[in-house]
Image 1 (cartoon, rainbow, N blue to C red):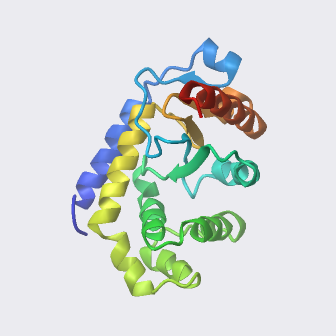
Image 2: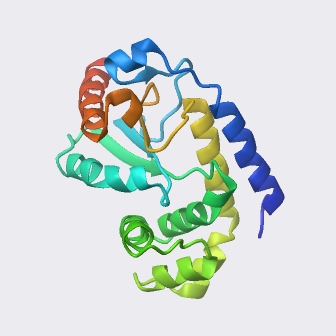
Length: 214
């Protein structure tokens, strides 16, 4: 494993969890379905309204949210950019995070996410062993050894560290959580479920479109 050590990666995740536990849930959030972020987070797509989903492949709530968010994505406006982050906010999430970022680097992000969701939540496989994850990726056209090497790469280490920093900056305390343009966070508990999250996404992307003059 290159870059930060395994112990360092797990300590980073533990620190993230400790910070997230203090994020306040307010009456305002309950009323409108989202929470403004005190210090807005920089986005990767400054020319568009960015919708960023924080998720974990092993999360049943993320799996249940997937049809709703994919349905929204099919018809999302051109001024919106949709991205995902899979921060390892718990040490047990790390193998899935490594697989996700390796798949992104190798151009397999979308099929990998769907295949992992199916394997974990439909076929009841925990998919925590790197070899099993790489074998699944090989079924999508990846070279298994290259995928394993990429999972251990500095690029994946960097992506995981950045994802944790983004999660901490956004103040998320659960997944799936969605950040709209680095300014607002919504989740199922705040918005009243998956449909509520989509409603908030649609409303606040329109607000941000007007604010950006798009």
